Image (cartoon, rainbow, N blue to C red; front, side, top):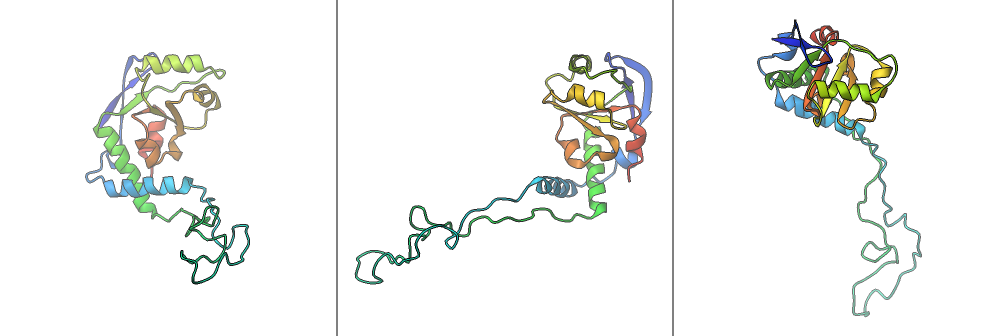
Length: 208
């Protein structure tokens, strides 16, 4: 697949880049692999530090409240009973690790499937390489408008870390920046458009 290269003014430069069909055009993209990769990514973001006090952990007297029989009501052991206000919680959440293992081949298949879906839906745009002498959000906003991406959530893929571009886009809620070598399935699918700089194409075409 070939895509036209645009400049930061939103004009076609006349150049074209070729996308590797083994990355952007696989024959059988796997939705299930995509599901697993996204599930793993979100699970790994969870802290898992939730905790609720159970009956044995609540502060309160362990004295039996009343007689076992003859009271005319339900039996109660102590004030920490889960059925009483202020008592412990039954089977409350405990700290745990939500992360799980996913085979490398499955993750690679998921990423190639996600990139294939983007290419099939014409949601990939290639722009020529650009840089800022200093962080300037206004200049980055002008580029977004020139590319007609304002109002859309998009992912900008850079060939390497660029602190000036990152700082220029940091305050924009719909703009996300990632380097080509760090791209993953969730980042690809979590954005409407994928804007790839020209130098990043070589990196993406050679992803394992």
